[in-house]
Image 1 (cartoon, one colour):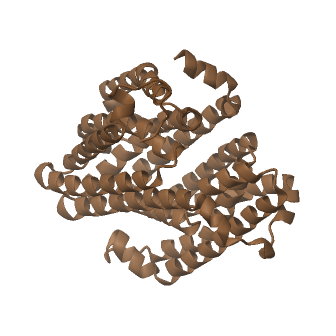
Image 2: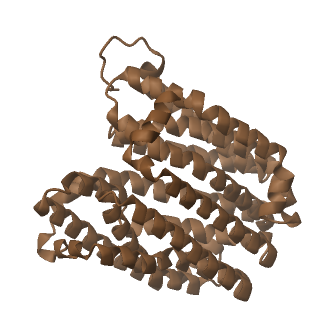
Length: 436
């Protein structure tokens, strides 16, 4: 715990820790208010349908920018003092990201009815929502590439301020559209709100307009792709696999159990996302940079078990309190029509606890660039998640989906422990470097 606190006080990322906390709190409040509006004006069934468009949007956004974000951030940070390499990085990522976004937008626009039938079945007519998504997507792509540039230059304060303002703007637009148009408004808000942040990001771009001279067509260098290609592969696997599996599971619940039960499952997922924001922000800001610094298995073991001893008990206690207070939590975020969600808490909370135990160690794949390991484990996770959920839904109804969540992360944790077993539990000779 002492090392954790020392790192907070010295690392550049934590110089904006308070602002980052404000960003997370803003996201959670915005999410809760949006969920409340959906519950009041739309209802349980609408919650399920909105869940599908949100998952699809999440996947298609990452595909549109080719999963470049993390790779661009890393590469810019590496070449920030090399004008030529920096120009090649900015030019290659910006133009490829923009053109790929245009292509994905065109595909979505001209296949809107097909996508509608896959997401909602032919019983619903939301093809026009897909077309709106396609029109908004290029602005999202420009926004994320601008974010990557600011992040690469460590402009964290500007980035976080933009996020906070963007969340507030998105919330206001969402609440207004839900109030005026109910489920159609919620659908439109879901696909438009993320792109609205680009209006705020323009301010950040203007403040760094000198960078625009670095973005030139003649500086496109495909060799640059090698520097962030592996990051793109990992991002695409994560960004596509989990959302699409969620859509498949939700549609299976709709067809085999009922759309109302699918709405309960989506509501439980929303609650889970809210509290996981806190713990994942700690992991992202502390664990990943720390793992990148350490070079020995002894240090790796110390960091993992230090996190387990200092953070996990507090997280576990928070989950216990959440379980005890679940009737009030459901009423606060939704309304009395969502009371059956209470039956899903136990397995979801257990699954999320194991998930955090697992991903803390799994971030070593990113820190040490073990890209193949990461992709294989991620694919394994989604396969287990899908088949265990389908089997358990047949046995237990919608509760089977959250049991499947728990089972899949227990197996994920087991595999991760096997891979890093020597580092965590074996006898480590002095001065052994961190290699698997």
